Image 1 (cartoon, rainbow, N blue to C red):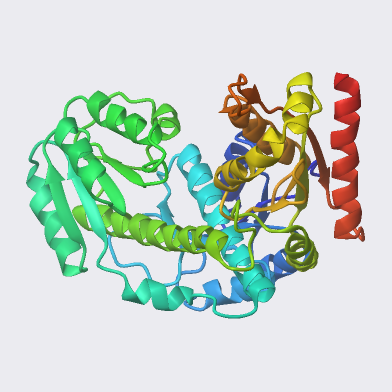
Image 2 (cartoon, rainbow, N blue to C red; image 1 turned 135 degrees about the vertical axis):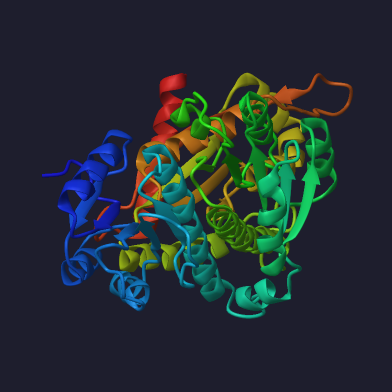
Length: 443
Protein backbone atom coordinates (compact mmCIF):
# COMPACT_ATOMS: atom_id res chain seq x y z
CA UNK A 1 0.00 0.00 0.00
CA UNK A 2 1.40 3.40 -1.02
CA UNK A 3 1.94 6.02 1.63
CA UNK A 4 1.23 8.75 -0.93
CA UNK A 5 -1.01 8.57 -4.01
CA UNK A 6 0.64 7.57 -7.26
CA UNK A 7 1.34 10.52 -9.55
CA UNK A 8 2.81 8.74 -12.62
CA UNK A 9 1.19 5.82 -14.44
CA UNK A 10 3.46 3.62 -16.57
CA UNK A 11 1.49 1.73 -19.23
CA UNK A 12 3.52 -1.17 -20.62
CA UNK A 13 3.26 -4.93 -21.18
CA UNK A 14 6.99 -5.25 -20.42
CA UNK A 15 6.59 -5.65 -16.67
CA UNK A 16 10.30 -6.15 -16.01
CA UNK A 17 11.15 -2.79 -17.56
CA UNK A 18 8.14 -0.89 -16.16
CA UNK A 19 8.76 -2.06 -12.59
CA UNK A 20 12.45 -1.19 -12.84
CA UNK A 21 11.53 2.31 -14.04
CA UNK A 22 8.91 2.62 -11.28
CA UNK A 23 11.55 1.76 -8.67
CA UNK A 24 13.83 4.50 -10.06
CA UNK A 25 11.00 7.05 -10.03
CA UNK A 26 9.96 6.09 -6.49
CA UNK A 27 13.52 6.59 -5.27
CA UNK A 28 13.44 10.11 -6.74
CA UNK A 29 10.18 10.87 -4.94
CA UNK A 30 7.73 10.42 -7.84
CA UNK A 31 5.24 7.74 -6.79
CA UNK A 32 4.50 5.42 -9.71
CA UNK A 33 1.82 2.90 -10.64
CA UNK A 34 2.15 0.29 -13.41
CA UNK A 35 -0.55 -1.04 -15.73
CA UNK A 36 -0.37 -3.59 -18.55
CA UNK A 37 -3.56 -2.79 -20.50
CA UNK A 38 -5.54 0.25 -21.54
CA UNK A 39 -8.69 -0.58 -19.62
CA UNK A 40 -6.82 -0.84 -16.32
CA UNK A 41 -5.05 2.43 -17.11
CA UNK A 42 -8.34 4.23 -17.78
CA UNK A 43 -9.87 2.91 -14.55
CA UNK A 44 -6.83 4.07 -12.59
CA UNK A 45 -7.01 7.52 -14.17
CA UNK A 46 -10.66 7.83 -13.23
CA UNK A 47 -10.18 6.65 -9.64
CA UNK A 48 -6.79 8.06 -8.65
CA UNK A 49 -5.25 11.57 -8.79
CA UNK A 50 -2.65 10.52 -11.36
CA UNK A 51 -0.97 13.51 -13.00
CA UNK A 52 0.95 11.94 -15.91
CA UNK A 53 1.07 8.79 -18.03
CA UNK A 54 4.10 7.24 -19.70
CA UNK A 55 3.15 4.85 -22.54
CA UNK A 56 5.55 2.21 -23.85
CA UNK A 57 5.35 2.45 -27.63
CA UNK A 58 6.61 -1.12 -28.07
CA UNK A 59 3.55 -2.45 -26.18
CA UNK A 60 1.03 -0.28 -28.05
CA UNK A 61 2.62 0.39 -31.47
CA UNK A 62 -0.51 1.18 -33.49
CA UNK A 63 -2.66 2.93 -30.89
CA UNK A 64 -3.04 6.33 -32.55
CA UNK A 65 -6.01 7.34 -30.39
CA UNK A 66 -4.55 6.23 -27.07
CA UNK A 67 -3.57 9.79 -26.06
CA UNK A 68 -7.13 11.11 -26.39
CA UNK A 69 -8.49 8.01 -24.65
CA UNK A 70 -6.22 8.47 -21.62
CA UNK A 71 -6.93 12.19 -21.37
CA UNK A 72 -10.68 11.57 -21.54
CA UNK A 73 -10.44 9.03 -18.71
CA UNK A 74 -8.81 11.63 -16.44
CA UNK A 75 -11.09 14.55 -17.39
CA UNK A 76 -11.73 17.18 -16.16
CA UNK A 77 -8.22 16.84 -14.73
CA UNK A 78 -5.59 17.65 -17.35
CA UNK A 79 -2.76 15.13 -17.50
CA UNK A 80 0.58 14.95 -19.30
CA UNK A 81 0.90 11.99 -21.69
CA UNK A 82 4.40 10.97 -22.77
CA UNK A 83 5.70 8.21 -25.03
CA UNK A 84 8.60 5.86 -24.28
CA UNK A 85 10.23 4.36 -27.36
CA UNK A 86 13.31 2.29 -28.09
CA UNK A 87 14.64 4.86 -30.55
CA UNK A 88 13.56 8.20 -31.97
CA UNK A 89 14.45 7.97 -35.66
CA UNK A 90 11.04 8.79 -37.09
CA UNK A 91 8.44 11.48 -36.60
CA UNK A 92 6.23 11.21 -33.52
CA UNK A 93 2.46 11.60 -34.03
CA UNK A 94 1.00 14.93 -32.91
CA UNK A 95 -0.59 14.96 -29.49
CA UNK A 96 2.12 13.56 -27.24
CA UNK A 97 3.44 16.02 -24.67
CA UNK A 98 6.92 14.50 -24.59
CA UNK A 99 8.83 11.55 -26.00
CA UNK A 100 11.60 9.67 -24.20
CA UNK A 101 13.82 6.79 -25.26
CA UNK A 102 14.76 3.77 -23.17
CA UNK A 103 18.17 5.39 -22.59
CA UNK A 104 16.59 8.40 -20.86
CA UNK A 105 17.93 9.06 -17.36
CA UNK A 106 15.38 8.82 -14.51
CA UNK A 107 16.25 12.37 -13.44
CA UNK A 108 15.44 13.59 -16.96
CA UNK A 109 12.04 11.88 -16.87
CA UNK A 110 11.32 13.27 -13.41
CA UNK A 111 12.14 16.88 -14.30
CA UNK A 112 10.21 16.72 -17.58
CA UNK A 113 7.13 15.20 -15.93
CA UNK A 114 7.14 17.80 -13.14
CA UNK A 115 7.42 20.59 -15.71
CA UNK A 116 4.57 19.18 -17.82
CA UNK A 117 2.34 18.73 -14.76
CA UNK A 118 2.76 22.37 -13.72
CA UNK A 119 1.78 23.31 -17.26
CA UNK A 120 -1.42 21.27 -16.90
CA UNK A 121 -2.19 23.03 -13.60
CA UNK A 122 -1.69 26.40 -15.34
CA UNK A 123 -4.20 25.46 -18.05
CA UNK A 124 -6.70 24.36 -15.42
CA UNK A 125 -6.27 27.67 -13.59
CA UNK A 126 -6.87 29.49 -16.87
CA UNK A 127 -10.14 27.56 -17.28
CA UNK A 128 -11.23 28.48 -13.74
CA UNK A 129 -10.39 32.15 -14.18
CA UNK A 130 -12.42 32.20 -17.38
CA UNK A 131 -15.42 31.32 -15.20
CA UNK A 132 -14.51 33.94 -12.58
CA UNK A 133 -14.04 36.80 -15.03
CA UNK A 134 -16.82 35.53 -17.33
CA UNK A 135 -16.01 37.67 -20.39
CA UNK A 136 -13.28 39.10 -22.61
CA UNK A 137 -10.79 36.33 -21.86
CA UNK A 138 -8.02 35.90 -24.45
CA UNK A 139 -8.23 32.71 -26.49
CA UNK A 140 -5.11 30.61 -25.97
CA UNK A 141 -5.25 28.73 -29.27
CA UNK A 142 -5.66 31.98 -31.20
CA UNK A 143 -2.65 33.42 -29.39
CA UNK A 144 -0.56 30.36 -30.22
CA UNK A 145 -1.53 30.50 -33.89
CA UNK A 146 -0.66 34.20 -34.21
CA UNK A 147 2.84 33.94 -32.75
CA UNK A 148 6.06 34.01 -34.80
CA UNK A 149 8.09 30.92 -35.66
CA UNK A 150 9.91 29.03 -32.94
CA UNK A 151 13.37 30.40 -32.25
CA UNK A 152 16.35 28.28 -31.17
CA UNK A 153 19.91 29.16 -30.09
CA UNK A 154 22.76 26.75 -30.91
CA UNK A 155 25.87 27.24 -28.76
CA UNK A 156 29.29 25.71 -29.45
CA UNK A 157 32.10 25.31 -31.93
CA UNK A 158 31.17 24.33 -35.51
CA UNK A 159 30.23 20.67 -35.77
CA UNK A 160 29.56 18.62 -38.92
CA UNK A 161 26.13 17.71 -37.56
CA UNK A 162 25.09 21.34 -37.15
CA UNK A 163 24.21 21.84 -40.82
CA UNK A 164 22.12 18.65 -40.86
CA UNK A 165 20.21 19.60 -37.71
CA UNK A 166 19.82 23.17 -38.96
CA UNK A 167 18.38 21.87 -42.25
CA UNK A 168 15.75 19.76 -40.43
CA UNK A 169 14.82 22.62 -38.10
CA UNK A 170 14.53 25.09 -40.98
CA UNK A 171 12.26 22.65 -42.83
CA UNK A 172 10.00 22.64 -39.74
CA UNK A 173 9.89 26.44 -39.76
CA UNK A 174 12.25 26.95 -36.81
CA UNK A 175 14.52 30.01 -36.75
CA UNK A 176 18.07 29.01 -35.70
CA UNK A 177 20.79 31.34 -34.40
CA UNK A 178 24.36 30.11 -33.81
CA UNK A 179 26.79 31.36 -31.14
CA UNK A 180 30.36 30.05 -31.06
CA UNK A 181 31.13 30.85 -27.41
CA UNK A 182 29.48 31.38 -24.05
CA UNK A 183 30.09 35.14 -24.38
CA UNK A 184 28.25 35.28 -27.68
CA UNK A 185 25.52 33.01 -26.30
CA UNK A 186 24.72 35.27 -23.36
CA UNK A 187 24.79 38.33 -25.63
CA UNK A 188 22.10 36.69 -27.75
CA UNK A 189 20.17 35.50 -24.68
CA UNK A 190 20.25 39.03 -23.27
CA UNK A 191 18.96 40.65 -26.47
CA UNK A 192 16.51 38.06 -27.77
CA UNK A 193 14.00 35.47 -26.58
CA UNK A 194 14.54 31.82 -27.54
CA UNK A 195 12.23 28.83 -27.15
CA UNK A 196 15.07 26.34 -26.63
CA UNK A 197 18.86 26.19 -26.47
CA UNK A 198 21.12 23.51 -27.98
CA UNK A 199 24.50 23.13 -26.28
CA UNK A 200 27.28 21.25 -28.09
CA UNK A 201 29.30 19.34 -25.52
CA UNK A 202 32.54 19.13 -27.51
CA UNK A 203 35.57 17.39 -26.01
CA UNK A 204 34.91 18.95 -22.59
CA UNK A 205 31.25 19.56 -21.73
CA UNK A 206 32.13 21.61 -18.63
CA UNK A 207 31.65 24.91 -20.49
CA UNK A 208 28.27 23.81 -21.81
CA UNK A 209 27.17 22.84 -18.28
CA UNK A 210 28.38 26.23 -17.03
CA UNK A 211 26.12 27.94 -19.61
CA UNK A 212 23.14 25.86 -18.46
CA UNK A 213 23.92 26.75 -14.84
CA UNK A 214 24.20 30.43 -15.73
CA UNK A 215 20.79 30.34 -17.40
CA UNK A 216 19.22 28.82 -14.27
CA UNK A 217 20.60 31.71 -12.20
CA UNK A 218 18.77 34.20 -14.44
CA UNK A 219 15.10 34.64 -13.63
CA UNK A 220 14.18 35.47 -17.25
CA UNK A 221 15.98 32.40 -18.63
CA UNK A 222 15.20 30.01 -15.78
CA UNK A 223 12.54 27.99 -17.61
CA UNK A 224 14.11 28.05 -21.10
CA UNK A 225 14.69 24.38 -22.05
CA UNK A 226 18.27 23.26 -22.70
CA UNK A 227 19.40 20.20 -24.66
CA UNK A 228 23.02 19.06 -24.29
CA UNK A 229 24.48 17.22 -27.28
CA UNK A 230 27.35 14.90 -26.31
CA UNK A 231 29.52 14.62 -29.41
CA UNK A 232 31.61 11.73 -28.12
CA UNK A 233 31.77 9.36 -25.19
CA UNK A 234 32.96 11.39 -22.21
CA UNK A 235 32.71 10.92 -18.50
CA UNK A 236 29.79 12.96 -17.21
CA UNK A 237 27.57 12.76 -14.15
CA UNK A 238 24.23 12.67 -15.96
CA UNK A 239 22.17 13.19 -12.82
CA UNK A 240 24.25 16.22 -11.87
CA UNK A 241 23.88 17.64 -15.38
CA UNK A 242 20.07 17.58 -15.07
CA UNK A 243 20.23 19.16 -11.65
CA UNK A 244 22.48 21.93 -13.01
CA UNK A 245 19.91 23.00 -15.57
CA UNK A 246 20.00 20.63 -18.55
CA UNK A 247 16.53 19.45 -19.61
CA UNK A 248 17.60 16.78 -22.08
CA UNK A 249 20.82 15.02 -23.11
CA UNK A 250 21.43 13.58 -26.56
CA UNK A 251 24.01 10.79 -26.43
CA UNK A 252 26.58 10.30 -29.24
CA UNK A 253 24.39 7.54 -30.73
CA UNK A 254 21.43 9.90 -31.18
CA UNK A 255 20.71 10.76 -34.82
CA UNK A 256 20.38 14.33 -36.08
CA UNK A 257 16.70 13.66 -36.83
CA UNK A 258 16.10 12.55 -33.27
CA UNK A 259 17.89 15.61 -31.83
CA UNK A 260 15.97 18.01 -34.08
CA UNK A 261 12.60 16.48 -33.13
CA UNK A 262 13.47 16.56 -29.41
CA UNK A 263 14.41 20.23 -29.70
CA UNK A 264 11.13 21.04 -31.46
CA UNK A 265 9.11 19.27 -28.76
CA UNK A 266 10.95 21.14 -26.00
CA UNK A 267 10.48 24.47 -27.79
CA UNK A 268 6.76 23.94 -28.51
CA UNK A 269 6.06 22.92 -24.92
CA UNK A 270 7.94 25.94 -23.58
CA UNK A 271 6.17 28.32 -25.99
CA UNK A 272 2.75 27.06 -24.90
CA UNK A 273 3.50 27.24 -21.18
CA UNK A 274 5.02 30.70 -21.54
CA UNK A 275 1.92 31.92 -23.38
CA UNK A 276 -0.38 30.55 -20.68
CA UNK A 277 1.65 32.07 -17.84
CA UNK A 278 1.82 35.46 -19.56
CA UNK A 279 -1.95 35.36 -20.02
CA UNK A 280 -2.47 34.58 -16.33
CA UNK A 281 0.00 37.28 -15.27
CA UNK A 282 -1.71 39.85 -17.48
CA UNK A 283 -4.91 39.40 -15.50
CA UNK A 284 -3.41 41.49 -12.70
CA UNK A 285 -4.32 44.51 -14.81
CA UNK A 286 -7.97 43.60 -15.31
CA UNK A 287 -10.47 46.17 -13.98
CA UNK A 288 -11.94 43.63 -11.56
CA UNK A 289 -8.62 43.26 -9.72
CA UNK A 290 -7.38 45.48 -6.89
CA UNK A 291 -5.85 48.37 -8.84
CA UNK A 292 -3.23 49.28 -6.23
CA UNK A 293 -1.70 45.80 -5.97
CA UNK A 294 -2.80 43.62 -8.91
CA UNK A 295 -4.25 41.16 -6.37
CA UNK A 296 -7.74 39.74 -6.11
CA UNK A 297 -9.91 41.93 -3.92
CA UNK A 298 -11.63 40.32 -0.92
CA UNK A 299 -14.98 39.59 -2.61
CA UNK A 300 -13.45 38.57 -5.93
CA UNK A 301 -11.01 36.27 -4.12
CA UNK A 302 -13.88 34.64 -2.21
CA UNK A 303 -15.78 33.97 -5.43
CA UNK A 304 -12.74 32.62 -7.25
CA UNK A 305 -11.76 30.46 -4.27
CA UNK A 306 -15.22 28.87 -4.23
CA UNK A 307 -14.94 27.99 -7.93
CA UNK A 308 -11.37 26.80 -7.52
CA UNK A 309 -12.19 24.53 -4.60
CA UNK A 310 -15.05 22.94 -6.54
CA UNK A 311 -12.85 22.53 -9.61
CA UNK A 312 -10.05 20.94 -7.57
CA UNK A 313 -12.50 18.39 -6.16
CA UNK A 314 -13.72 17.51 -9.63
CA UNK A 315 -10.14 17.25 -10.89
CA UNK A 316 -8.97 15.30 -7.82
CA UNK A 317 -6.34 17.96 -7.16
CA UNK A 318 -5.17 19.09 -3.76
CA UNK A 319 -5.78 22.73 -2.84
CA UNK A 320 -3.85 24.53 -0.13
CA UNK A 321 -4.27 28.01 1.30
CA UNK A 322 -1.63 30.26 2.80
CA UNK A 323 -2.41 33.35 4.89
CA UNK A 324 0.20 36.08 5.45
CA UNK A 325 -0.64 38.35 8.36
CA UNK A 326 1.57 41.37 9.10
CA UNK A 327 3.19 40.72 12.47
CA UNK A 328 2.44 43.22 15.22
CA UNK A 329 6.03 44.26 16.00
CA UNK A 330 7.06 47.58 17.65
CA UNK A 331 8.16 48.83 14.22
CA UNK A 332 4.75 48.04 12.76
CA UNK A 333 2.93 49.64 15.69
CA UNK A 334 4.81 52.91 15.09
CA UNK A 335 4.25 52.70 11.32
CA UNK A 336 0.56 52.04 11.85
CA UNK A 337 0.20 55.02 14.21
CA UNK A 338 1.86 57.35 11.66
CA UNK A 339 -0.17 56.00 8.73
CA UNK A 340 3.00 54.67 7.09
CA UNK A 341 1.75 51.07 7.08
CA UNK A 342 -1.40 52.04 5.20
CA UNK A 343 0.70 53.89 2.62
CA UNK A 344 3.03 50.89 2.24
CA UNK A 345 0.21 48.31 1.92
CA UNK A 346 -0.15 48.71 -1.88
CA UNK A 347 3.61 48.19 -2.34
CA UNK A 348 3.53 45.11 -0.10
CA UNK A 349 0.58 43.68 -2.01
CA UNK A 350 2.23 44.42 -5.35
CA UNK A 351 5.34 42.54 -4.24
CA UNK A 352 3.23 39.54 -3.24
CA UNK A 353 1.47 39.53 -6.62
CA UNK A 354 4.85 39.22 -8.34
CA UNK A 355 6.24 36.59 -5.99
CA UNK A 356 3.47 34.02 -6.48
CA UNK A 357 3.42 31.56 -9.35
CA UNK A 358 1.17 32.30 -12.30
CA UNK A 359 -1.16 29.42 -11.45
CA UNK A 360 -1.63 30.61 -7.85
CA UNK A 361 -4.21 33.23 -6.85
CA UNK A 362 -3.30 35.85 -4.26
CA UNK A 363 -5.88 38.10 -2.60
CA UNK A 364 -5.79 41.24 -0.46
CA UNK A 365 -8.21 40.62 2.40
CA UNK A 366 -7.23 43.78 4.32
CA UNK A 367 -4.21 46.05 4.75
CA UNK A 368 -2.76 43.51 7.18
CA UNK A 369 -3.86 40.17 5.74
CA UNK A 370 -3.14 38.51 2.39
CA UNK A 371 -4.19 35.05 1.23
CA UNK A 372 -2.90 32.74 -1.50
CA UNK A 373 -4.78 29.80 -3.06
CA UNK A 374 -2.37 27.15 -4.39
CA UNK A 375 -3.87 24.37 -6.55
CA UNK A 376 -2.03 21.03 -6.78
CA UNK A 377 0.11 22.04 -3.80
CA UNK A 378 0.58 20.22 -0.50
CA UNK A 379 0.32 21.78 2.95
CA UNK A 380 4.10 21.81 3.50
CA UNK A 381 4.69 23.32 0.05
CA UNK A 382 2.12 26.05 0.76
CA UNK A 383 3.88 26.90 4.02
CA UNK A 384 7.21 27.04 2.14
CA UNK A 385 5.67 29.51 -0.33
CA UNK A 386 4.58 31.75 2.52
CA UNK A 387 8.00 31.60 4.16
CA UNK A 388 9.74 32.44 0.89
CA UNK A 389 7.52 35.48 0.27
CA UNK A 390 7.94 36.62 3.86
CA UNK A 391 11.73 36.31 3.62
CA UNK A 392 11.86 38.46 0.47
CA UNK A 393 9.58 41.22 1.80
CA UNK A 394 11.31 41.31 5.19
CA UNK A 395 14.49 42.36 3.36
CA UNK A 396 12.75 45.51 2.07
CA UNK A 397 12.80 48.82 3.96
CA UNK A 398 9.58 50.84 3.69
CA UNK A 399 9.39 54.62 4.00
CA UNK A 400 8.09 55.94 7.34
CA UNK A 401 7.90 59.55 6.15
CA UNK A 402 8.69 62.78 8.05
CA UNK A 403 12.38 61.94 8.26
CA UNK A 404 11.72 58.85 10.39
CA UNK A 405 13.83 55.72 9.92
CA UNK A 406 12.33 53.17 7.52
CA UNK A 407 10.53 50.14 8.86
CA UNK A 408 10.52 46.48 7.87
CA UNK A 409 7.56 44.12 7.57
CA UNK A 410 7.47 40.62 8.97
CA UNK A 411 4.63 38.13 8.57
CA UNK A 412 3.08 35.40 10.63
CA UNK A 413 2.18 32.52 8.35
CA UNK A 414 -0.69 30.07 8.43
CA UNK A 415 -1.46 27.28 5.98
CA UNK A 416 -4.26 24.76 5.50
CA UNK A 417 -5.04 22.04 2.99
CA UNK A 418 -8.64 21.65 1.86
CA UNK A 419 -10.15 18.56 3.49
CA UNK A 420 -12.68 16.25 1.78
CA UNK A 421 -16.12 17.83 1.99
CA UNK A 422 -14.77 21.00 3.61
CA UNK A 423 -15.96 24.42 2.43
CA UNK A 424 -13.26 26.68 1.01
CA UNK A 425 -14.14 29.40 3.51
CA UNK A 426 -13.61 27.00 6.42
CA UNK A 427 -10.15 26.07 5.12
CA UNK A 428 -9.31 29.76 4.75
CA UNK A 429 -10.37 30.37 8.36
CA UNK A 430 -8.15 27.49 9.52
CA UNK A 431 -5.18 29.04 7.72
CA UNK A 432 -6.03 32.44 9.20
CA UNK A 433 -6.26 31.00 12.72
CA UNK A 434 -2.92 29.26 12.19
CA UNK A 435 -1.37 32.61 11.27
CA UNK A 436 -2.89 34.13 14.43
CA UNK A 437 -1.55 31.29 16.56
CA UNK A 438 1.89 31.81 15.09
CA UNK A 439 1.68 35.47 16.06
CA UNK A 440 0.78 34.55 19.66
CA UNK A 441 3.73 32.13 19.88
CA UNK A 442 6.09 34.86 18.66
CA UNK A 443 5.03 37.27 21.42
